Amino acid sequence: MTASPTVRSELLRQRSRSARLFLLPMILALAVVAGWPLLRTIYFSFTDASLTNIDAAKWVGFKNYLSWIQLKSGRTIYSGLLVDPAWWNAVWNTVRFSVISVALEAVFGMIIALVLNAEFKGRGIVRAAILIPWAIPTIVSARMWGWMMNDQFGILNDLFMRVGLIDHPIAWTASSDTAMIAVLIVDVWKTTPFMALLILAGLQMIPGDIYEAARIDGVHPVKQFFRITLPLVKPALMVAIIFRLLDAMRIFDLIYVLTPNSAQTKTMSVLARENLIDFDKFAYGSAQSTLLFLVIALMTMLAIWIGRVKLDGGER
Amino acid sequence: MPMSIIKNTAFYALVAVIVVCAVFPFYYAIITSFRTGSAIFTIEYWPTSFSVANYVNVIASGSFARNLLNSIIVSACVVTLSLLMAVTAAFALSRVRFRGRSLLLLTILSVSMFPQIAVLAGLFEVIRLLGLYNTLGGLVFSYMIFTLPFTVWVLTTFMRDLPVEIEEAAIVDGATPWVIITRVFLPLMWPALVTTGLLAFIAAWNEFLFALTFTSSTETRTVPVTIALFTGSSAHEVPWGIVMAASVIVTVPLVVLVLIFQRKIISGLTAGGVKG
Image 1 (cartoon, rainbow over the protein chains, first blue to last red):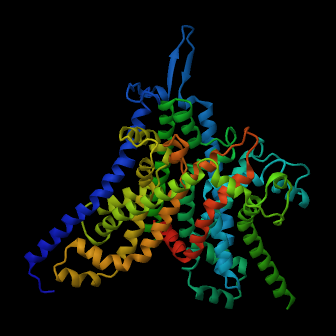
Image 2 (tube, each protein chain N blue to C red):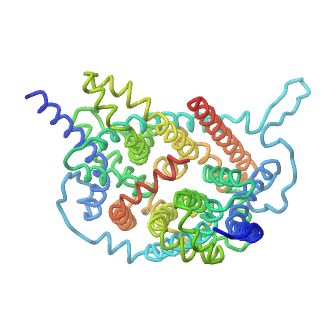
Image 3 (cartoon, one colour):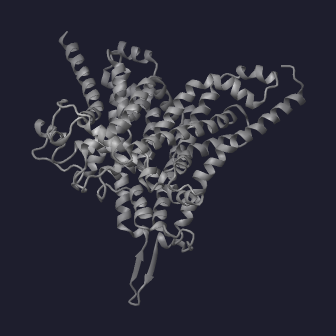
């Protein structure tokens, strides 16, 4: 190009000017729909706002989180979110659900990805089949499984009794012992395909000649998996696990539809919405939303930090 | 070689288990939707009766047809709006150097990690303030929070991989950035636009929390809310046949789309994930 420096810099200036203009709608939209509402939620958590009277919200400090009064007898009574057993129950449910579901999805996802990575007749059919659970809306899968897990007419009880796994019908979604298992079954069924596809993308980046060399050296396939496949696919696997963990922490719709009113499956999102909308404890629900946000933000930062540290270490 | 026969059989048994587990619930929903009356309460593994009564019921009764239309309108508007904003934003983020670019990209990525519940209270206030409560516009507006970061991110990674040369001729000719986007990039971007548009459509079609919270009348609901709130005369009498028929109606278009575009969708999903 023979453009003189002044013409070039003029072009560059024009470019960055229009870049700003091009970014503006997107930034504005995200500010109005994400940034501002997040700040307002945090603000509401420090007020006494109620659903019917949001405008009259008054600042109350940390009262929704923790407050105490000292009785004349010298005893102190604490109240607020941080000493609320319902909240800690929801935290425990969320953590339990996230860790178990993502662990199971990683194992099953790895198995499916290994199968899809092999050459065999009918691979296309398998790939199409595993996309079906992913394509089905969560609400629909909750309803479908709710019907299959019906205590009287459900096919799951029938199947398990025929096989001999159980000797009497189970009320999967209603019984407090099995409600969490029911939620886990549906979530693993629905999201394992996503995990499998992410792991498969990682597997496909491993060059084939490594396996060729290992085969010639007579390395046992199990050893191949643990010594070659797993270390090489680890970055992709970690990204998939982190994505899924962050996603699992905010689960709402599956539990709302499959096991409503079950204390064993009530997660932070479900509890927060209940307080915000159904119980008219708008400020209290905002405090719960804020804490959930903080937990997820912390986890995200930790994930990014771990990722960066590993990246530098790998390059050196 | 009996060893390899055993191995092969075991492998194909595993394949069969995977396929059956993946497909069976949807298959069972379909055969249930074609049964009526007491036939629904006998457990059958194969289709034994064929009646479209549930489908006629679900479309004729209540507001299901209206809700279906709502879902189509909302999802189509969400896709159009987010693609419009994302194409121009992705151009700026991928082809122009400016200060704070990586910070902006990081912010966009972290917005897609937001738990929806964290903005629910604030968004509720904004939507009421704008007079969008219980309208389809309110849903389109709020859905931007999850479709926009995703479409911007995927389109940015796609545009970044395009060679510089394609722009050079246009720049030498003195074309404005707007002309470059519409004449040079858009024709090359159709595959990426189809993929991200489809993924955004699916996300909007399936959304539940906002649709449940920001609508109050049956006429403004979208189908996931309708299906979730279907109840019979009493809480214990769920009309399973009708629920299954509605579920099949809502799901079949998605499954067909996904199967047609499966390669594109897989590459879009992994681009959104792995490159994060």
